[in-house]
Amino acid sequence: MKTLYLLVFICFLSLPLVAQENMVTAQQKNEVSIELTDLPTSFFSMNYERVIGKHISVDLGIGLKSKDGLIKFSGIDTDKIKTNDITYSGYKLIPEFRYYLHESTNGAMLNGFYFGAYLKYSDFSSDLEGTYIDSEAVSHFFKYKGDISVTSIGLMIGYKLPVSKHFSIDFLIAGPGSGSYNFKLKNIIPPPDEFYDDLNTALENYSLLDLINSDFKFKNNKLSSNFGTISFRYGISLGYSF
Image 1 (cartoon, rainbow, N blue to C red):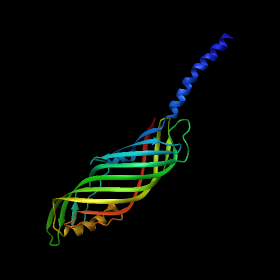
Image 2: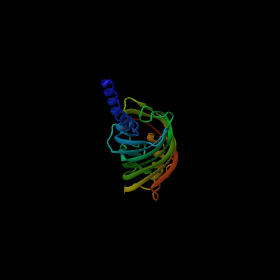
Image 3: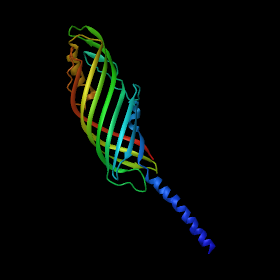
Image 4: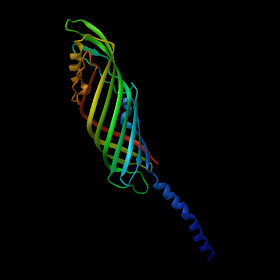
């Protein structure tokens, strides 16, 4: 009989510990992640996600880019204009709103299929230099400092796959949207005035901008151009929840 009382007493003492453990598990509402698909381009991007409801979370992504990277973009190469390879550095900020189709179970972070909306702001700088052959076949060296800022808004759909109690892989499957592109040039060594018409044409046919319905309007007295067009996001991230 004493043994039975002792077992009941031990079980009674252990109940607060079990309740506390369950409460800790239920508090797994935060996640930090690294975007793996950005790494080859020398872009280091981190995200912080916070659960604010049974199906809802908010997310903030921050990315920094250096000019180095495994992926390089060839420069402009036409009969009249030839430039260096395109490298750039800068940052991006991406706040997101997500709705997951399923509620969290066993105190884990929200996972599975989700859809949502995002706002993205990017700002990059680049050096543009090369040679220009004018209408009289005279060669001119030119050099510019370039700045590109993009503000876009869109919708997204993805799937977060849990691989352990704390780790998951987030697949952003599609993120179509609309973006406002702003390009600015700063003269370092300017070319002749006729250069700008050829530059606008070359940029519209530049392979890196094939997916952008661009309409460049640089002039000798207007070294900026802006237009709106479609934007798109995708990516794979590795996350840790707590």
